[in-house]
Length: 111
Image 1 (cartoon, one colour):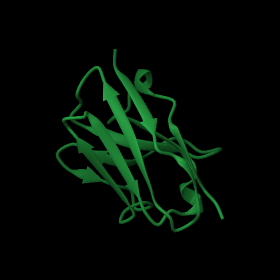
Image 2 (cartoon, one colour):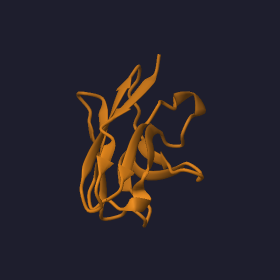
Image 3 (tube, one colour):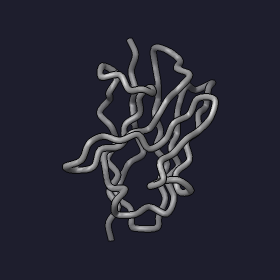
Image 4 (spheres, helix red, strand yellow):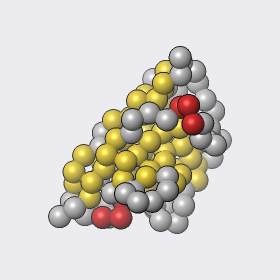
């Protein structure tokens, strides 16, 4: 059974950092991504890894995706967090599969 379990979210102040983790079980995927969904907005892809990494302009230079193949875990290092980064963060394959969504981890950036 394929399962993605996200962790590492929390409440931080603007400018601070967080590292999210996504433990993958059941299979190893070549292309993985971190997605986020802010209140009232559509879910969006914020980081991709698989041969190369890619980020939208909104997080480029602040977020870094990485993976530990031995642990089958994908990470998202988030620096210089802004209030607009507040969202529930999920990992999934790219393109995302509906049946792979986990519960996500909530990141709240607020002073």
